[in-house]
Length: 235
Image (cartoon, rainbow, N blue to C red; front, side, top):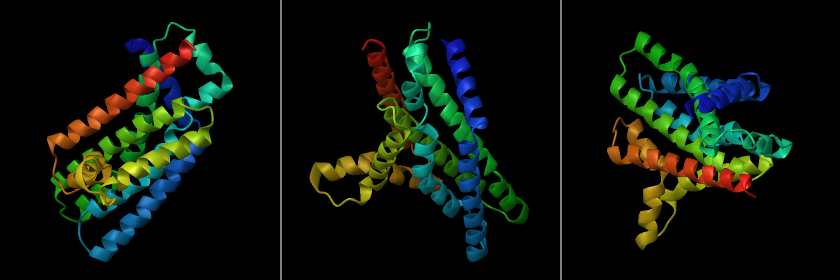
C-alpha cells in the first residue's frame, strides 16, 4: 500500500511543479501576502504575524479549489482514471496519493512564507508561541480544504465545476458562525465553523477539540472520496 501511495504522490507532486498554473497561483498569492505583510507591519509598527496569518486563512478559500480541481476530475475526463483503476492499485491508495500531493504543494507554499516570521525575528522580538500555533491552525485548515476539494473533484469531470463546488462549500463552512440562526441550528453552525476554530489558533490557543475536528473532517472527506472512486470502479 505504501509503495503505491508514494508513487502516486510523487507523480502528482511532479505534475504540480511542472505546471505553469501552479507556479502562477503560488507567485500570485505569495505576492499578495508580501504586500499585506508590508502594509500590516508598517501600519501597526508591531512584530505581530497574526493579521497576516488571518489573511492566509481567507486566501486559502481560493487556493484550495485551484489546487484540487484537477486531481481526479482531469483523470476522469481524459479516461486515465479508468486505466488506473484496472491496475493493482487500491482506491484508498489512489485517494491518499493525490491528497498527500496536494498537501505537499500547500506546505511548499507555506514554507515560502516562513520568510515573514524570520524577518520579524531579525528586526523585532515577536512571540514565537502564537506564531507557531497560528501556522499549525493554517496548516490544519488548508489540509481540511484539500480534503473537501478532493471530494468535489471526484464528483465531476469538469475542473471548473469542481473548483466552484469546492469554493461554495468552503465559503459556507467559513461563514457558518455569522449566519443568524437559533436553537440547535445555531449550535450546529458554530460547531462546523472553520473560521472560528482557525481564529482560536491564530490567537495562540491550541484546543484539542479544534485539532480533533480538523482531523475528523479530513478523515471523513477522504473516506467519502474513496467510496466515490470505488463506485466508479464497479459502475
